[in-house]
Image (cartoon, rainbow, N blue to C red; front, side, top):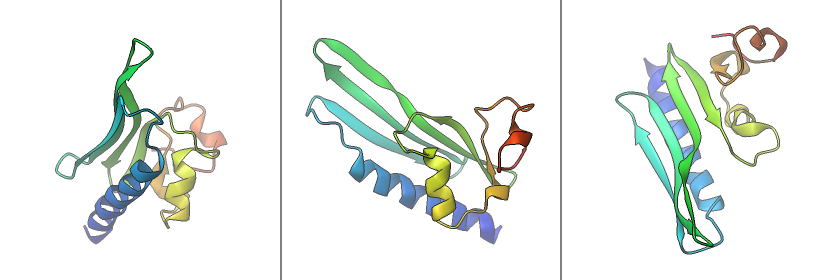
Length: 114
């Protein structure tokens, strides 16, 4: 339980830090963080307008499940993906599941299978 509490706080902090760095270059686009500690879901999403085009959607979804961090969706611009930031923050690869990969492909990564 202590590990889960630590991960909840760590994910919240990492998303807050990332949010400060990824502000969209136009004032018509807002970026938001959603941190639901109860369900274990953490999201970053954007909403607004660019050149008469609606910009709306989640670009990062992390989920805590079975004391692991599941990366449900990663649309960040990070070179190694958001998983690299999680590892740099001290989360072992064995506790990170790249959920966006097919289960049959996960054995070929350095991360947890599930």
